[in-house]
Amino acid sequence: MKTTDEIRLLLDRFYEGKTTEAEERVLKDYFSSKDIAPELAFERVMFEGLVRSKTTTPNDLEHRLEQQINQWNRLELSTKRSQKLVNLRWIVGVAASMTLLFVIGIGIYQQQQQKEELQYGEVINNPQDTYRHPKDAYAKTRWALKKFAQSINKGLEATQLNNENKTE
Image (tube, rainbow, N blue to C red):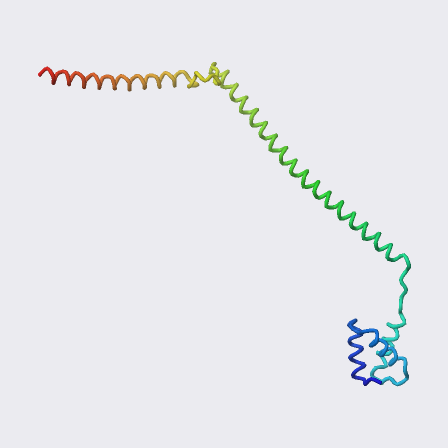
């Protein structure tokens, strides 16, 4: 027969779920006997309650558990799919908004171009026209001709000085 300390150690291991079947049989035999230490009387009631409360498992428990797990898996897969759809809808929504803004911007730009064409009476898209306002074109032409005339005059003066130096 085991000592009280050994029984306590076995009880601790039993409550932790670390006993073997042989050790559980030792505990069962000990608590079934009449020679129980008085300090372990309460443990006897607890142990007998745990040992006697053997529950039987239904025959179809494994099948029902398998069905429940499969149902959870299907639910998880459908949730993932719906999350992907939500993400895809969000991306499509952003792309559609950007496209809409781009189209509106192009429309506003074209309207502005048409207003300017009507306002100034000229075709802006014609590559021969470089200025939108005739006054600007006239001023730039005048400036270019002035520069050209200055360059010609410098050249003529230099030629005249050269000719005068040759004749002397």
